[in-house]
Image 1 (cartoon, rainbow, N blue to C red):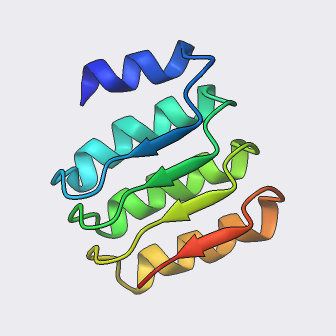
Image 2 (cartoon, helix red, strand yellow):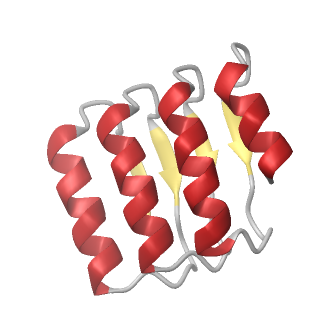
Length: 104
C-alpha cells in the first residue's frame, strides 16, 4: 500500500482506481488519504469492502476537504460508524466536486 500511495502523489494520468476487497483498513486508509491530497487527477475511487472504520473515514474526510478532482467514490460494505459518517458529512459541506457517493 505504501508503494501505491507514493506513486499516487506524483501520478498525472490515472483517473480510475479500483481497490475493493483489499483489506485496506484504517491504517491503509490514512496513508491513502495523504496521497489523495496531493493527487488532483484521480476522479473515480472504489474503496468498497475494505474494513475501513471511523479512523480511516476521518482521514479520508480530511482529504476530501482538499481534493477537488474526485467525482465518484464508492465506500460500500465497510465498517464506518457514527463518527466516520459525521466526518464524511462535514467534508461534504466543503467539497464541491464529488457528485456520486455510494455507501451501500
